[in-house]
Image (tube, rainbow, N blue to C red):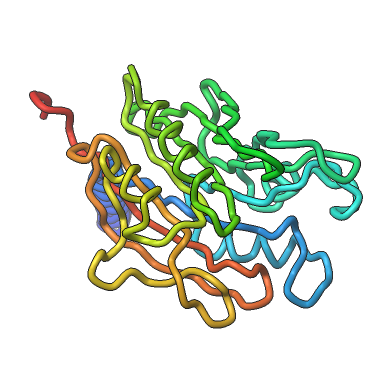
Length: 271
């Protein structure tokens, strides 16, 4: 073997070692990028229908899990599209839709997009009163590349001026934690500001991924003035907030998207 060949082999070997080390280090961090995004049933603020624009907001930040609100399933106003599946195809993520109510020749509810496959799923109808819109919480179970199983819940609370339904819905979401075996992430448009009764009810059990002293507003997208979009986590001691960011595209939706990176901590007694 000539000296030049030896040098080349040594260079390639060193490169492979560096790559392996880099992958091992990054893989040891149980980080999850979560995006909550109210997509306004696929319409844009220009009055047209542009799923590529909505998908572009998602792809630009490369989230692992996406909670979508105001999702249409084969309605007339959404041109008969299954929006969750269409956005899943455009973003190369596994989609699932959860119905909250029938609407306009199709259905309306929640969507989840995931980088990882679904182990199980459940759509839970939330309590509501009178003529208010029905709401749902869409739950999926998935496994992270590290082998950790987690639950992810996407939801959308009542939007009316009276918070009575939101209080009922917050209590129901807290009930979903009864008997859970895995760490949980909650994301969605809760239509309630920090310090309100529904948020305080949730925060009795859930950790929060926003600055309490100065919560960044998420609505409306053209001039955000109030925070109503959230990412929360349970148990509080199993997750660490790495970063959070409000993403405002003034055309894609009337809501800003809310991006949070969480790191899953080792369970007590495990290292």
